[in-house]
Amino acid sequence: MQVSILYPQSREDFAVALRRHLHWHQSLEITWIATTPESFTEDCDQPGDLLLCLDAALLAPLNRPPREIWSPLLEQIHTSRRAAFFTWDELKLPTLLQRYPQSPATVRALRLCLGLWQHSLTAAPPLPSLLDPTIDSPGDFDIEGDLSLAPALSAAAQPWFEQVTVLEAHHSVEALLTAVLSNIVPAGRCLYLVTGYSGPLDSPPAGASLIRIRCAAPAPPANPAARALELIPLIPAHPDLPLPFSTFEFEQLLPGLFHTHWPIAERLAQRAGAFFRFNHRVPEAIWLYGLFAAAARHMGHAGRALDCDSELSWLEAGGVRKQQFLEASQTTFDF
Image (tube, rainbow, N blue to C red; front, side):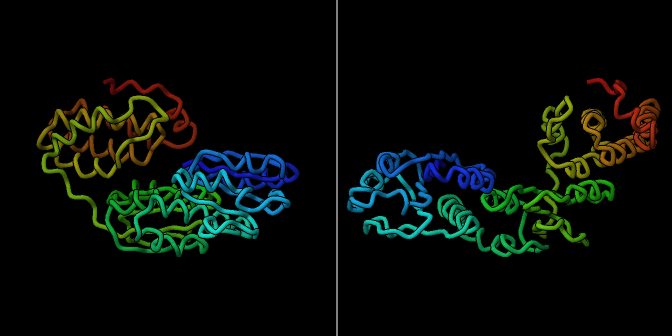
């Protein structure tokens, strides 16, 4: 979405400060235009979805009628080329422009105007009402929903927060659940959407909002082996790349898969274990190799069980030895 912001050349300091407040509207492509009364009418003729005029009363020429001053903008609205129009201050406008929201008196009010405008173009009706309590009142909020609600809320919340993080907390393994919840850290004006966790939570960081979406874990796949074969090539083989699905899928798949489709489960565990090691995700790696070792012993794969025990000795070690693990080139599981 394209936004053009006109401001007086003499207010460059104000424009610089305002940029810092608006930079996290990542879905907006903002063009900043320093203008004067002489070039104001010409500068109004900008492509895009929205035009915002800061200190327009200082910019608009005093000796010309409003319709002539705003003629480029009126033409764009007549041809549906522009979706909205704001001014920072009160001034006389042609009738056609008076139907648009006007005069956000503070930076906060301007951010709210931009957020409401984006919601009017992109968000489903129920979402803003769910977000309303969190926008100006940091705290912990619970709502009922399902997994599909989290990405929808995340998209709708983007204009209001510097950072929006979705945390899927369906894990039954305590170490994995602790690792997920440890991602709730101070980060300025941020929103955390936590799904599938009904236990106690520490207070969110100062200035942050936290929505806990109470929902059931997703149903296990009808064909675990087929799903495992889909996941294996999706797991990044290099560090510093995100996992494109939730680790609770491993919790669902691996325990039963080890006993019904050992070769597939072994491949999935090897690939996932390497990913967790490369990315220093120690709690998840400890859980996986512990499960892997127990299953290998049960299935009679003594060599694989010893390999897993070796990995666990590195993972569970502390101090210098753990740092050695983090820096070591692990080659036990090549793929």
